[in-house]
Length: 193
Image (cartoon, rainbow, N blue to C red; front, top):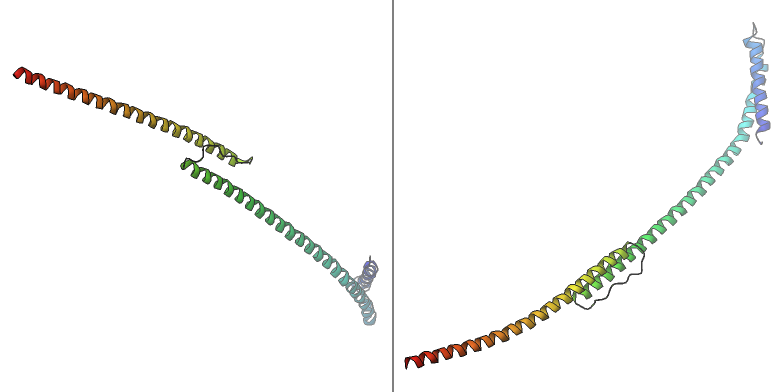
């Protein structure tokens, strides 16, 4: 709107110049335009173009500055969004890392206790993710290990009992054999006498 009047004046000035040049020089058989008249009309057209230029430059600068400010605001919003996203990703990564580390530590402690025969109960992990599946599998291993360990202890105790019984019977058999051999030797001596 600020440029409407200067634009209209510039258009009128240029059209007037072109009309005069067309009628008096181009279509006329002889040049009917004086130098002073041409200078006055062309100066008026040039002045009207400069007026619009002088009025348009501040308006264009304002428009450009508004666009630059809008782009800067977008850039700042983008920086804040990217920063918040990076913070969220870092927060989730750290949370996930600490969760994994805690689960691994619980499993390590349980393994250590299991190997020292301290722990026979299941591990409890209060999560609803894949780690609970790992802990459940680990609990199955602990239960199987406990059963195998108990069975091994029972078998060792049975073996010990059987070995003691076998040793006792072997000793009795040896005593019996010595008695029998001694008796046989006495019988042989008696027969020889």
